[in-house]
Length: 188
Length: 129
Image 1 (tube, rainbow over the protein chains, first blue to last red):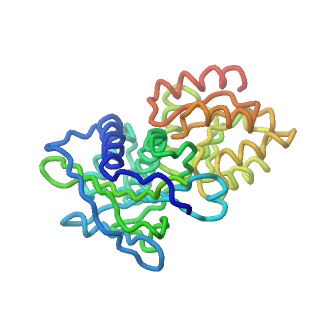
Image 2: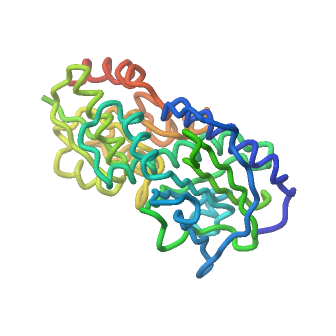
């Protein structure tokens, strides 16, 4: 990818924080017990993909969903990503979110909780892509979500030259409940 | 009674949509597909019975836009009303979907409320089924 206008990591974090907080409050009825935390982390890569290890984020099991981003349909067809978006949900919080989002579905099993985590990831990423024209991305294309319990074993495609992730953590009942990690290369 | 085809890679979303339809009082048989390719297979054997398609956009294998574009080119199914139910909610994307399938009958941006889904599909179901 040709180098474009550099993305201010703080600005990127603020956009993702804004988009995700709104969705989590509206769709999941989340009530946060403290301000979210923003951090920059090194990308841990394996086989040219981001390792998405949820057990690193929480003191227990969790659900993970990820979406890969492309700057255009052509880049999607060529499998040249410009970024990645990963959502981690602490296990009990993921179950609560399913109850809030599903509006009364009674057969809640692990597969459904994981599936719902993917759907939530999709909705937040969709909201995010509608709010990043300021970074020069006017037609960002997002993949369908991949999902897993505790991690995504195959990893997550991303723009390989990027080395940092912006990470936003949300707290519910004073525990870390939701972590959103994002990496995005400068727009071409 | 015509069938309703719900196309979404999320099983939870499909169940939620089906639940909303049934709570609204529609008792039509419902077909499900997890992506556009599955939906085409489903339509291949059920096309005479399907009265409406509710379709997500971002799905693996064949996405919603590719699916609605494909069915728009087949006369036997081109007239089936399609409602997109998707996170792709910008005016550009709505225009893109309309261009892909002129028979687009509705567009619902996620997240949505049951009321929005009901009010969008009810007139279509009442007039087509």
